[in-house]
Length: 295
Length: 252
Image 1 (cartoon, each protein chain N blue to C red):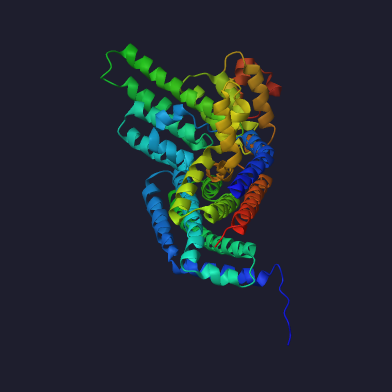
Image 2 (image 1 turned 180 degrees about the vertical axis):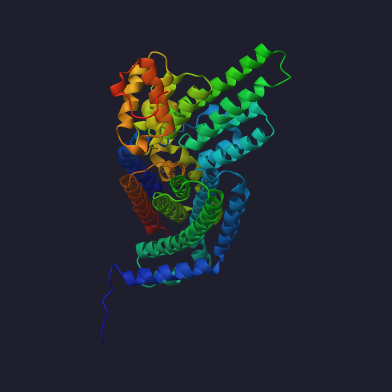
């Protein structure tokens, strides 16, 4: 009889766990939020039609990218928070871990499932966003061409160029990638918290606090490192916030992208890399916490 | 308990390790002229608790948009004080949006200032004029702050030049602003011409303006627009340029 040797790391096992997690999440019908996103997009496009095209595009982009950011962040937290408690409740975790599946593979598979779901969601939202932006741009181009029919072609071209520049800019795509990195970071951190939390609700509440504090982390770090007048207690608190919480402000580049700031691609790459460092480290912490947990 | 302490120590160690990286990245962001908004308590007082919370959770730009829409409504109702306040908040939250600075300055220096000059509720003409001047100064202040936050964008220098030209009749300052705009990447071609036109109106700078206009004229047909030719001819007369050095065409 042929004896198959157990491998300490198997991509096949991880893929199976990922696919299983992804299917489980899909069954929760969470893609309904795309409907809300579409309504939000169309609503803001219609409402802003009374403003100039620069203002209309700016608000449309702000609303869309803001919604993308909040939806993916919420999805990352809520979807990840219920993974472990659900498996424990349904006792599937015992079936999985009773087989020769190392715990780190289990965690990687779970996280990869959520990341796949987040990637699909953000792709769908981006497609919707770009479609609405393109349609509005085309509508405005035909309106402009009608209104400027008697003007010299040079002026018409200049107006069309301004319109196109207001609608699309090269930084939109990397901006969306950074939103995804932020969601991935939150998913990894949620997984870490859920490895020692007592319930699903506890994880979600903790993560909501982390989300808010994470946006203040940069301010705390600044006060800790630069404010020499503060007393030791305040400095200690600032240091704790700066060291324990992730800096989520780094992942809010979309504000500046929409305002038309030319952000170097290198900076986007550094931010994305920082995001993946966070993901890897939090996954490692999750494994450390989960490794010795009695099930 | 031991495991939890160990985990917390790991978390702190990771914090210490990433501290220099995050500080360097933040510094890089700041030097690139973005992410400059400081979410202090003063801002919280101005935008309210809900707005502040939204700004804290990464929706700075979205809150700024809402404030901008609110300012638009206030403008339709000609509530000038409110327009000022709302634009002040919007520009504080999103200082990189050139559009907000431009619109704020336009509402203050053009709309509000003219409305004040015709406001029958004010006791007399002196007060009306004074109120008008105050709003022009507020518009100028918006543009100057906008430039400090966006020194790399030509649009705000151009808007400030327009304000100097049309509202303060300070042609020299307008010429300076147009020149600054022209020196920046992405500036439209006409700003260089406008700088020379404005200089030609500034008393005592005729020679300088004449040289600038000649340089543009010599660049070719594309620059030889009716206003440029008219300004050149006016200066030729004023400076008494010898006939053989003057540009061809009908004398004024």
